[in-house]
Amino acid sequence: MNLFLTHMSALQFWRWWSVSNAVPLWDFHSGSSSAASSLPAGTMRTTSTLNAPCCTKNQIAETLDRDKGAIRTILTQARVAVGQGGILHVAIPKTPGKHDVTNITYHQVWQQLPKRAFLQIAPNLFVASPELTFVQLATNLSFGGLLALGEEICGGYPIAARFPSVVGWRLGPDHTPSLQPNPQTVLVRHPLSSPIRIAAFAGSCKGVKGATVARRASKMLNGMSASVRETEVAILGLSPRCIGGLGAAKADLNKAVRLSAAAAQVAQHKTATCDLLFRDSHIVIEYDGSQGHASAEQRTQDARRRNALKMDGYDVRVLTDPQFQDSQEFQSIVRESSARAGKWVPALTEEQLAKHRLLRRQLAEFHKEASASPWFQ
Image 1 (tube, rainbow, N blue to C red):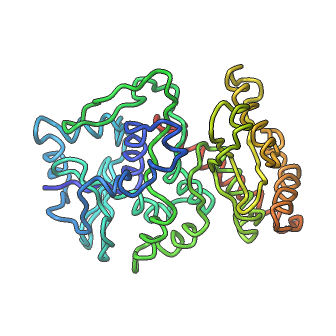
Image 2 (image 1 turned 120 degrees about the horizontal axis):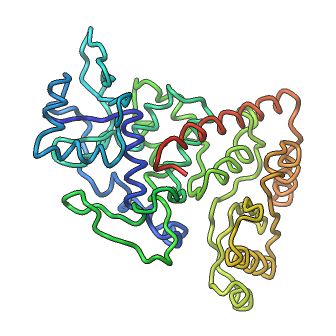
C-alpha cells in the first residue's frame, strides 16, 4: 500500500529536501536551480490520484516498516512526525465518519486533484507537491503567513547553521547522502517551485479547499528570495495596499546585472546581484542586516558590489534592520525608491497603516513558528 503525506508533514519533508539538495548561491542567483527541470515536479514521478492508499493506523505502520523500515528511515531523517507528540498528516479518499487517531491526522480528498499533485519519493511513499502543500495550508495560515510560505517555497534560504552536517548532501538512489560540498562554497536551500507554477496549480484546483485564497496569494508572490528578511521587505513593500503592503513599483529579488569593464574591476566579478531591483530602472534597495556581525570579508564584498553598481549608474539605497523595523522610516525609503523608479505611491492612511502593522505581525508569527523546524533559517 502507499502512504500519501500532506499538509504540515509535506512541508516538513520539503524543507528537509531543499536542505538535502542544497545548491551553490551563485547557481541560485543564476536562476538555473529554479528551472522546471531542476524542481521536484520535474525530476520525480507524479500522480494526481490516491492509488492503494494507507487508510488505517495498522496499514500505515505496516508501510513504514516495509523493506527494513526504509520509509520510516526517510521520515526520521526529515524529522517528520518525530517524537512523542509528532503528528503524521495523511491523505485518504473520501471516507464518511473517518476520525483521526493518536499521532495521525487524516485529510480526506473529495475532489479530483490536478496533475502532479503528489510526487513519489520512494516505493510506497508519495508526498503532496510543494504547489499542493501551498494550497492545502492556505486554510491554516494567515494571509501574510501564506505569502511568506510561498516566498520560502520559491526561494533559496540559507542553510541552518545548527545543522552543518547536512549541508550539501544530495540524495542518491538509496536515499543516502552522496555529495559533500567544497567548504568554500556558499550553499542555500534548493528552490521547490516558482510563482508561475504555484499560480498555475492553484488555478487548476477546482473546488479544492483553500484554492481560492491560494490563487489570490499566488498572484502576489515575487520568488527568488534568499532570506527571511528579503521576503518580509518584498511582501511589505511590494504587496497591494489593501492587504497592508505599500504597493510600490514592481521589482525583482536577487536580480543579477552585468557590469561594465570598469565596474567589474571594482566588484572583482562580471556581474552583481541586487537585493531588490525595481524593473525598468536603475533603482536598487540593498538590505543590510549584519549590524556589525558580518565578517570583514563579507563587508568588503558588499562594499565592492555596491560601489560597482553606483559606478554603473545604479541608485543604491541601503536599508538597515532598525530602518526596516520602523514602519515610518521603512515606508519613507520604499516610497522614495518607488517614485524614482517611476511609480509614486502616497503615504499610508491610518487604516492602511493598521493593515500594514497586522501584515508585519503575521509575517513575524509565521517565521517564528517556522524557526522551530530544524531545516529553517
